[in-house]
Length: 484
Image (cartoon, rainbow, N blue to C red; front, top):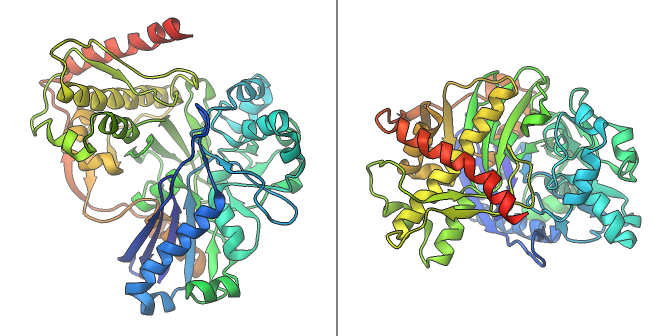
């Protein structure tokens, strides 16, 4: 048995697989996000430990005998979070999360230094870890002076589970401190934020052993002591391992809280000017590119909240037949945007509203707007040297066939739906736990699932969506000019 622990923004998920990679059971425990000021997004790291305890306890209620045979653990989590630890191993302040935009000035200052893009292959985005520490140095100098270690969220769980400060390449590539081509920390990048290598965790590949379960924690959780913990992965790389998106040219579209267009590469292909992320993959000798949309299903959740509905009700109201875009357009920039704009200050909006614009029209516009944002990422990937011919859809939004038909038509390519099963980050990191425990070949383990259904673009509506996309593209500079 192998356990994948995925620390998400809204919950911790524990998923158990056997040696045939069949899901045996899963459980989750909810988390909350604190937003004390506009643009801020934080979590208490100790809530991650409490949620992990809860998720494993729920899993143990129904699968105690299987957990007794556990041989390996994998960890994944939301990326970029700045979890600061003092010399006593205590958390200094709440973790500043991936969708926090307070450090936009610090990010711009670091990005103006050409060595950051040269060495990391990426723009320094406000959501990345390095500008958050620079923000701390300016605005919370007493806290900054106490920093002994900076850990990414999943690696704080590892510190609790194994007592060691270790990270891996895929997650660390999103800090702006890693030389992504060389897969190592860079001292000059660290120095630019007032830090040194000793304040960073040790680095391993995602498939390697990175600590073992401490006896006292094992006793508390009802798990075998001393079992290996894999390096693991950032959430998107872990999802890619779960989807088998590890070979050059394979891709998936994740319709989650944020949206990701993810392409696996067998070489390092940086092109920061396109605002595409070029990161290390979780498997040795592999990299990946991502176009990132900060609000995907989060945009639908927002609409559901202000219309006193739930997302499933909203999408059900659209019916089963895809229709051409109406007059209403939506820009999904509720938390700013990464690809392709790199604009933390921009905010979303509806355009083309009329007296006839009802809730259905707004829902359709939200789904179309997020899909248009994916098309922006597709164009950015092409600019970065990656051409895609099809994608596999995952994430909560992929449960809406209407949304997937919209996405296929907007992207102009088939969208595959995997066969029933959980192929997300928890499954992917359980696979990494298996690889680390058994020294298995990563490429023979991280294989893609069978395709249950393929949704092809609606050719009859393609020109209508192309025209709507051209209007959508014109709205960003107009909105930025009107609000900046």
